[in-house]
Structure formats: C-alpha cells, structure tokens
Length: 465
Image (tube, rainbow, N blue to C red; front, top):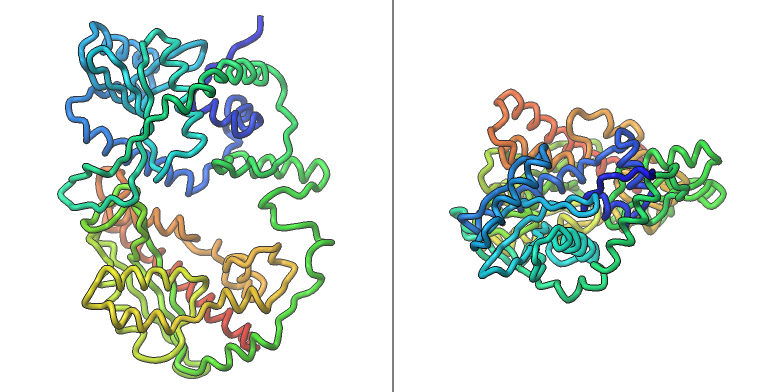
C-alpha cells in the first residue's frame, strides 16, 4: 500500500514553487536555513493577523496550534447548529490535506472565508493559496459560499489610539479561483506520488527565490557544486571565464572625486517599515529613519564621526532630521550609496514643514558613489553585483561585516531595533542590559557602513589609504 503524507496549504504552495522544496520540507526539514528576512515576514504576518482579528470583535479563536485533532473538533463544535458565527483559525481536513483559514464568517447560513495577507496587493500565489483553502473546506462538508483575500491598503494612514479601521482592503476572488480549485486534486495526487519516491532531480534556478526564498537553496547549491561545479543562481556570479580578467578603475573616477572639494560627508540611514503602523501619521511599510551615521572629512586625513540612534520606541523621525542638519552643516558634498538617502530626506522634508527647506537643501548636496562605481570600476570579485557589500571586499577586505556582533546587515539592524524598542511582538521589553548590547551593535553596524563609504571614496579618488 502506498504511503500517504499529511499535506497542508503551505506545503502545497511550497510544492507549487518547487517539488524538490516540498520533498525536503517533508523528509529533510533540518537542512533548511530560514533567513532573517523570512523570519521577519513570519513575525509581520502574525501582527497583521492579530490586527485583522481585532477588527471583528466577538469572533472565536480556534487555538490548539499544536494539537490539530483538537482544532478540528473545536471547529466542528463551533459550526454546529447553523447560527451566525465568526471564527479565527478554524481547521478543516480533506483527503490528507489540513488547512486553517484566517477568517470564516457564517451569516444567515452563508459561509465566507477570507485569507489575510500582509502584502499590499493580491499576488498570483495568493489565488493558489485560496484555491487550496476552498477545495479543502468545501470537501470537508462545509457549504462554502464565497472566498475573499484581505490585503494591506498602502494608502492607509494610522490615526493613532489603536484605530486600524481601513488598514485592510478586501478583494472578492471566488470567480478568479474556480479553475484553480479544479486543479487542486491533481496537485495533491502528484505531490503524494512525488513524496513517496526519492528526491527529485531539479536544478537550482529562478524558482529558488520566486515567489519566496527557498530555505534549502544553500544545501541544493552545495550538492550541485560537489556533483560537478555547477553554477547556481546567487552562488557568487558567473564562471571565471566570463568574468573580467583583472580589476580596472577609470581615471574619470579620480577626476569626479577630486572635483568634490572639502569638507566631505558620508551618510547612511537605517530605517524601519511596519506592515501595521505603530506611530500616528504613518503608512504601512513606510520606511522611517531611526538611525544615521555620518563620517566627515574637513581636510584630507582628518576623519570625524557623528551619529544618531533612538531606541526609546517613540517616533524618532523629527529628532533624527534635526540632529542630521546640525551634523551636516551648510556646505560640502554628502556621499551616499544609491538614491536611498535622498528618498529618506525627501520623505522627512514632506513630513516636517519646519524642517522642509533645510532638508531639501541637504538633498541637493548628495553625491551617489554607486553611480561612479558602476560607471568606472570593474573587478572579477564583483560577480556582476555592485551592491556595497559586494564592492567592499574588493577594495577594503579588512572591513568585514561578519566580524561585527549581532548586527551584520540591514535586516538584522531592523530586528535589533524592534527588539530594543519592544515593537517586535515578543511581549515584554528586553532587559536594559540587552537593550544596551543591541544599541551598541546598531551603532557599530551603521558606523561601518559610512566608514565603508569613506574607504570607497578614497579608492575611487586614487588614494588606497
């Protein structure tokens, strides 16, 4: 008799992305490595779900997250009788597939299921997700009338005081998912057969990051390398024979840096964007600066540093802008990497009328080292990438982000900020000792970002020191 495997909505969606991913999730889950970004998405999803539930008072939460059999019984009991009811996380099972809906409402005998998403629009994979839900719920014996997807409305502006009415936009998808619902039995049968066989031979490719980053990518890439040195997406660039044979820096870069004059400033922001806004007057996912670092050179060889970081948990934006204006003075180029800092300055200028004019002046002083680097620098170690993290090892390998404690990239900075401020939904604030550790880690990380800009400008200008 062929063994059957318990599937879930998330497993089916994983299998739709890549059957090999599903096989590994079922048989070798310990091989997966979940990125900081993935963990952040999970945490954001929990917060979004909690707010969605708060907007429907009187609903019943089907708990029993670990005991699925109990969740199925609790759901059946809550639906018994036919009265109007709102359920959160109800559980349903059909043909070895178990799902839990975000929201089920029964009104006058008509059942509607709504999936709550933390994105700002309906994605294609959301429709597959909803189709699996609909197939299982209808198959379990529930008379399902309609299906909707509620997503974040990016135009929502939080008014404060916990008022999140208007945060979600609900989209009717019953008609859109009809053809997909009909395909679900084939998906289930195919995945059951695949899981009963050895690991499928599927090479790494675009599916490794679309629509989600696969937690097994590193393992699959390593297996391919061991098997024959295959080049995989994200493994460090094209084969050596297709890379530049040597590093190259055009003289035009020297001239552009030399023309900048003095004093010189080097600026980097760290920002946070909440799916569910926590500060009045802000929008979902709006990137809000809570930290900056600024190195300055008032003459060659004279390096100074200023910084700002607010981990109080209160809105940091105005103080961030005020302190930045003091640090940058009235003249001199301000070097950044990409256009991100300009975008942040414009956002601050639009938010604060009292600071709008001086912030606009600051924005006009920005010089984008990314554009100069991309136009004039070539190196085989770049692997086709001009991110600062790719460029830095080729010009200043001693500035190693891996040597930093706690915070080594932007996502880790966001996680550290959330933990230090108590905005990470962990419940209680971390200890003062822990907050101080996180504060120092954030300062060290952001300072290294701007020191990296200093080193890059020196390199582009022809001064390796």
